[in-house]
Image (cartoon, rainbow, N blue to C red; front, side, top):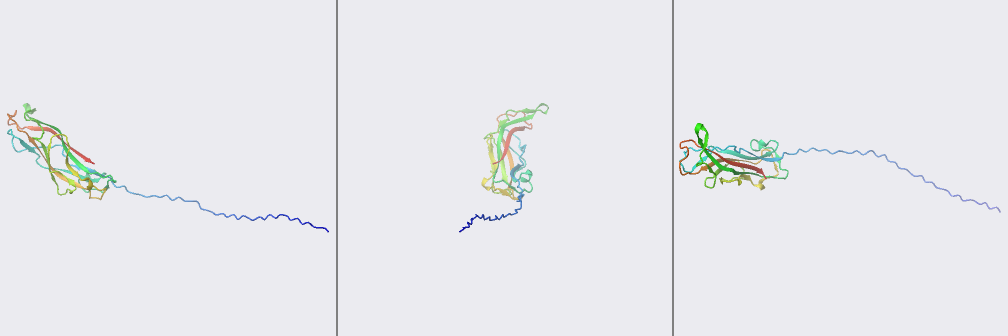
Length: 233
C-alpha cells in the first residue's frame, strides 16, 4: 500500500498593513500687536519766586528801630501737571498725568543764606560809601520776615504758615507744602492741584546810639540773601 505522504507546507499569511496618511497644513504663527499710550508723568512746579526783594518805607530813620517792607505782595504758585509742558502746572489748564505709583508731594522752604546787611550812603562823587554803624546782621532782634496770605483758590490739602519770622540762618523753614496722603497716582486734565500764595517781606533795621556818618543822606541797605528751596519728596 502506497501511502501518499502529503507534505503540509506552511502558509505565510500576509496581512496588508493599512497605511494612513494625513495631509496636515503648515502652522501659521499669528503675531500679537497692541498700542498703548503712556500718560505724561506728573511733575510739581513752582513759579513766582522773587529774584530780588525790594524793601522801602515812608518813614525817616531817627536812630530807633525801623521796619522796611515790600510795597506790593508777590504771588508764589506751586502746581502739578504733566512734565511735557511745565508751565501748565502753575498757569492755564493742567494736562492729565500720572506718578506711575511713585507719588511725590511738594515742599517750598525758605532760609537766610546770608545775614550780613551793608549800609551805604552816596559819598564823594556819588560813590557808595560804607557806614559801619548802620550795617548789621539779621538776627533774633531784627529778623527778616515773610508773611503769607493763602489765596482762596488754594486747596485745603496745602499747608501754609501765616508768618515765617526770625529767619536768622540757613535753617530751612517751610513756606508751603502739601500733605503727602493727599497726593494720588493719577490726575485728569485741569485737575492738577495748584496753590497760589501772596507773600510780603519785611526787615527790621536796628537802633543805634550816635549819629550816622551822613545825616540827611538817602541810605541804601543791601545784602542778606534769602534762599527758596523747592523739592518734590
